[in-house]
Amino acid sequence: MIRSFGEIMTAVLRQERPRTIAVALAQEPEILQAVGDARERGLANSILVGGEEEIRAIAGEIGLDLEGFTIVNEPDPAAAAARAVELVRTGEADILMKGLVGTATLLRAVLDKERGLRSGQILSHVAVFEPPGFGRLLLLTDAAMNIAPDLQRKAEIIRNAALIANALGIERPKVAPLCALELVNPEMPATVDAALLSKMAQRGQLPGVEVDGPLALDNAVSPEAARRKGIQSPVAGQADILLVPGIEVGNVIYKTLHYFCPGVKIAGLVTGARAPIVLTSRADSHETKLNSIALSLLVSSTLAPGNS
Ligand code: COD
Picture 1: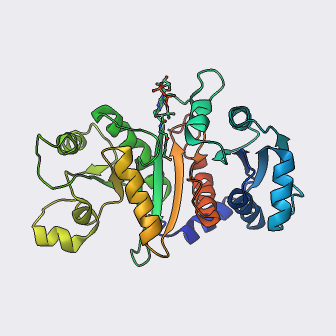
Picture 2: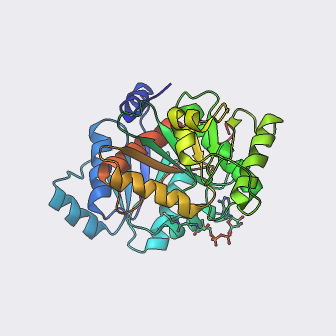
């Protein structure tokens, strides 16, 4: 089982396969820094789609040697997103990476029925955290794509996240559908969905995962909190995957960890498409972007069409 981003990097390097990243609108210092680091560590090369003049100017400012990178001059955001998607669709690149382009613009290019990267599965975002002292990786879904998933969509989001967990060596991931409490309260629809998802998993409708909820965040990740509350559950205190009821909760947890948890390591990707999509927020550091590249490279073979 992989327990850290250091181990993810090692696992990717062990694959000894040349890889290519297609970056949509690459003219941003943290992006260029991250793809520069990825090249230096031998993880992947990149095709930089975006405004060539700006890319060259920023590279000069941060001291990045562009030798070996391919630059595709396409300054328009939507066109750059479409071009980067095309590079992945045609096999010229293994993974897609969001640059300066807006999330919705990139995802619309990915979802384009003729020219996108649909695989027949739903697409969802998975964030992976390595909190200092936690001792293992923690997955959070969906903090960035599916806005207000219904029960069926939540089941599909769990399936997508479970594949990422499997790629990290977690064979049967434990999923905690997060709520504000541990009891079903019909006034709080997330608790009803959590109970239904647990029953679905119990009856084999969600293969390969253990789901138990509703659980509040403390009881999902802290064995001590679960014990004090007297919660008997195969997931409580040991969750691998935190399933949030909607994008706002997910986004707030992601950003809370980012801003209030010094030393936390983070990665984010969209999964379910024909290739992983590195999707981090503009405010994320180049280290988070590099971690996301490594994670996406690791899972790219698992998520290849036909393997999902
Ligand atoms: N998986 C697969 N197909 C999808 C998905 C999905 N998650 N979402 C939409 N589709 C398909 C639909 O089936 C349909 O065929 C087509 O795409 C368009 O569907 P719409 O009209 O519902 O989609 P859009 O274009 O209005 O919105 C899709 C977005 C992904 C852009 C939208 O869900 C969105 O804006 N999500 C939030 C992104 C965001 O702003 N995140 C901010 C935090 S970083």
